[in-house]
Every structure is written in C-alpha cells, then in structure tokens.
Length: 369
Image (tube, rainbow, N blue to C red):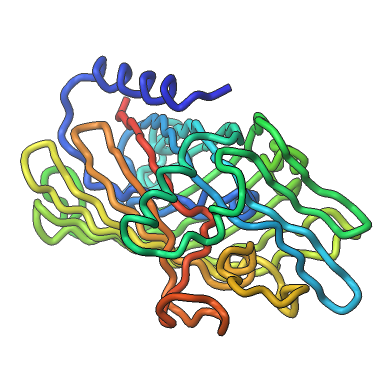
C-alpha cells in the first residue's frame, strides 16, 4: 500500500541524492485524477521542444474526490454513481529520444515515453481539513457534513443490474499503461541549447493493464492525437499549449452508461523563473463532458453540485499551481469551471465545482539521465 508519508519521503530522498541541476521550464503536466475520469486516456501537457535526453520522473499525488450517492435516469434505465474517497497515486514515467536508438537525422525530433501508475483508494485524512476550509471562507459544504468523513464509497452500477465497481474499503489499483510519442514538426532558433519555440504532434495510446473492478482502468484501448506548442521569448518566461482529440473505448457491453466516443481537451501552462533554481508554474486544463448526454438526476435534488452529475456530464476545468526547485516540484490543483449551475444550486451562478477531484496535492522528481 502506498502511504502518503512514505511516498513523500521516498521522493525527497531521491531529490536529496540528485546533483544540482538548472530549473526546468517544462509544464506541470497534471492530469485529472478523478476515479471515473481517470479510467480513460488523457493527454497531459508536455514541452513541444522535447526532453532532449533520456528522462525519468517519479510523481506522487493525493486527490480527494467527493459526491453523495447519485441516481441517474434515462428512460427506464437507472444507474448508481458515487465518488467518495482519497486516492494516493505513485506514477513512474520514462522518456527516451529516438536518436538514442536510431542514427537517422529525423530521429532527434521524435521521443516516446511510457507511463504507469498505481493508486490506493482509502478513507485518507483530507475530508475534515476541507470541511474546515469551507467553514473558514463561508462556503457551503456540498453536504459533506451529512456523511461520515474519511470513508470509502466508490460505485458505478446499474440499479437492479450490472455492477462495474463497488469499493467500500482500502483498495490497491494498478493503472493502465500509457505510451506517448511526440514528433517536433518545427522549431525556432536555439538559445543555450534549447529552441525558443516549437510545434509538435502528439500521438498517445492507452493499454488496458488495470482492472475496472478496482477502478484502475477502463478495460479498453484508447488513442489520442494532440498539437502542442511551446514559446520561450525570455529566459524568465515559457508558455505551453496543447489541444487534443481522443477516441475512447466503451465500458463493458450491456452497461447503459457509456462515455462519449470522441473526447477533447485544451491545456495552458505558464512558467516563471523567479530566482536561480526556482520557478513558479500555473496551469489550466479544460476537458469535455465525459459521458453521453440525455441522462438526468433521477430525483429532484436541492444541491445537485454535491452529486456526481457535474464531473461526468458537463465540461471540467482544473486549475493547478506549483513551485519548482531544481528537479523537485510541489503542486496543487482545484477544480473551477466557468458556466451556469443548475437552478437549485447555491452560490454564484457563473461557475461550478465538480469535486471530482475536489483537491489535489502532489510532489514530483524528474531527472535527465
């Protein structure tokens, strides 16, 4: 089992053992680690210029996900969904430029990386701090106060029918294997060994190495294409962009709730080098609605934002920020999506929170080999 303390300690030991290195201006590349959204392929943001050398990255994060038990209906079909858990994940990524394998002139423009993670779903410790935060800022509590804190409730099933997942205690989940390849299509004049701008094509593939029953993976093969851009007009500033389209496989046949076959996403990252080996990174990640439309809440709900409806059937926007010192980055994420709430939801009418995930805190260590 991955514990929060051990994961942080291991990455700090790796960082302490690493030699001093110039701060990277790569993006955070944070995905959306919700228990349902995380089942399918995502294209995290990457540097369009490429890594330039073989690289290894170890990344840990915790994500608090929350929803009350939710019943959704379409015609005479009803599904039951619930997202209530803390997920602690450890991910390993290895990047290899093709010019280390081939002598062809074009190989220097291509690189591939393999990415695999393992997650432990458990009650965690973050429910009470989140409730205290809501109290401190005067926010409503998404009905958290009506349910026991630090418990596990993850469910995806058909009422009276097929049950895809029903996790009620700590569960280890090996994730799907992601294979990501990037081809640099064009780049600008080099400065200090790195291009000042670049445009690259991304082609990603997800293979089903995880089990749906434990919410490790969707059980199918997904593929995606993306166009990435990086611009570094000054030594202290770098911007990254990515737009992508993905084709995702469905959930097991016979289950009425299915993802949209075509998904899309858009990411923006801004990196500011503020002093020596220190950089600040801010990112925004927008994702399309995950599941097919026409599903509605089965009952009238006073506070729909506390259900699983927003994260699965509406666009999802995730804001992230991080501090990078040399090879180590500490980052956090919070979901915040511009758009109108359903009529009965409290709060301002121009944005909503999906709580899937509600809050993410992470630590990564990356090193060029």
